[in-house]
Image (tube, rainbow, N blue to C red; front, side, top):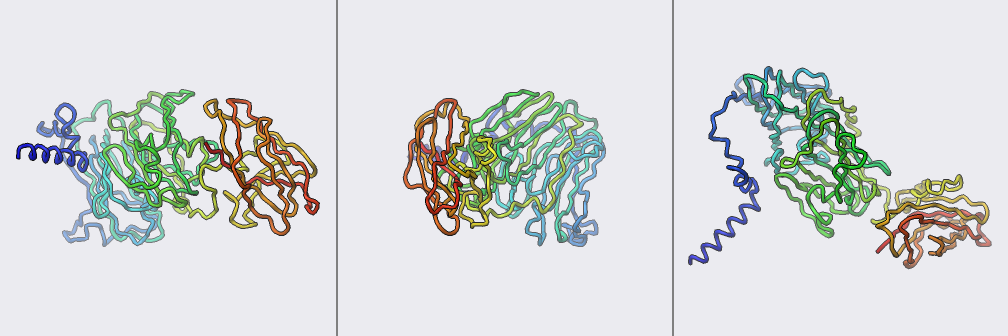
Length: 502
């Protein structure tokens, strides 16, 4: 009996830690998160809310819909204090209202906002979608209750506004802005900042920038929304944070899911949404397929990243930026004012990524057209193939406009750690004016094909897998145009994509 009771108590304790991490957190540290509650407070609690001033029940101001193009002030606070809690819920016929409503906050009379974000993304709701999750600073309650617990101090006053960039009125906008009134400004308190950024799609060859700020402060985390524009895993990109002008990353991570405190692509065959106090993956709709929608977050509550001059927080999109997915993020940080003014917020029609319809070969593919700069030859260039149908990966190919047998040479940059022997697969273009070619790598023939076929151009896969040996440096790729079929009208070569596999 006693033994069974001990087992039951052990199970209850374990389940409590798993199901309610906030309870577990309360037991950590010197006295836990509840330790300060018994101490008497030296501030006055206050609130700005959407209550019906007539005494009626139009508490979301149903009698005063927020019109398209309108900016409404929901809090105009005077004197020193700190916002401690925001609660918002919205009734709107606009299905994209989480992206079309913009939240801004201004501290101490500043003209440029310190917080600027579509309201959904500020609360970690990406893609204009609702879903439930909880973290320490942000929690989404049933049904569509948006809560924020970031502490936001100010010395002279604060102003919070909401702008309706959408096409229709907001029927009702309910809110609480809970705050403390202080007798005097609190010394050494940074001002809260939150900034929305997006890249639709991410730029080739450049890290996605989550945050770029100047001054003194500390970075406290972000949420990131990802729209898969191709099948496969969007992660593997290293996080790289540069502090105070460091030329090399001050903090260099090992992959996107690692920075966001998950692992192994959040499950390579099946992924389940989850949330916790400091990190989570609350949205995973579609897994690793094209047009899947993801949201992840990482909050540096226990491990803020301080800076005295500047900070730049970036992350690769795919390994070495080899994916072109759509990213949108909100970075959060504290800093001394003034801050660098934010870039203009994208227009509302630009905040929603379009559905990806162009075919992309499954990961880990390398696009042929991306090799064009390595050849540095006027006859080697990227070419759109969409006029021939949605069959070529990413809608383009590497075109070699040879007019006779020619060898085209490129030096391929690789890391020393990538040296080894691999298996390769190749996709090419066949058509009436395509010739015969051989592909050589580091002096070894890898494969060959005849690109001639009568009729319209078509995408083809070279059957089989071909060994390829990569050196630690000085790798040379040659595409040798060696002739053409008797009926071919030209010597062109089209390389769509290829894979290099272990």
